[in-house]
Image 1: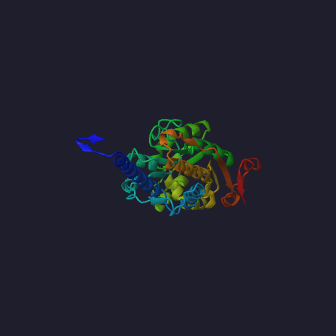
Image 2 (image 1 turned 90 degrees about the vertical axis):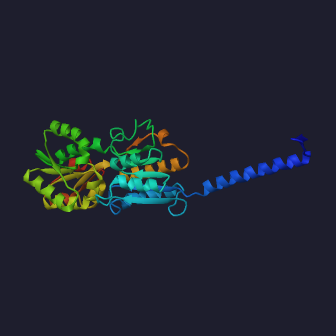
Length: 336
């Protein structure tokens, strides 16, 4: 065979093609080996505190382990908690994770998710328990997220009105309820105000500042307004400060209902909300799907399916509240 005036023997041509083929195969194998050997890096972004989220974070890790992802072995998790510090805003924490080039970001509430989405429109984001992903502007719809965000909805805002109903049933002749709120949770107020009106309850909205002194002041205001019970909006701030809030509710002898069982674990009176342990387990499943090639846009957002109503009789006794047998029968768990 002759090309450009140079003669090639058929055997030499076959050797050349074989050599090129071997080189291409080696290159492809090398790239594949690098990809296969890469340890995925997950960002865990939470505006709460590391200690406050420890139990649920462990649930998440355990479920990942069951799916074959073991932290420190074939997966790395970069934790970023705000720790109730203004200088550790979710925007700064999200930007830090993006700089690290994480493969995926796990978030808890809407502020975390919005910060992560604002920092990157390409890195997959998995929500563990966002109250209203559509209303928050995180996804186009639950069935078709359409972007880089998917995960779980806790239905926390819809359950606010149910908590108000339970509070009225628990406290005889309840007329005035103190609502501890944060300005960032203002979108939760409209349905709560409507529910209070239909239940013929006066809703006293009390702004709570993010520190121990601010919470004490909020409870003092509640007492001055002669409220008969307390509840809070659903935010990571209140979750992080749950121990102090429970202590103050006991100090001022105010019946209270909370949005997560962890408040009752700290000695609170009662809680009604989604089973967050179940949500964090399911979030790990989403992470597994994405790390195995799934696209957030193709994974529908799922809503909470397990709910728990927990009552602490010891806390009721401490504030002199008697709960009827009929009321107690509605609970999933009664702590004596």
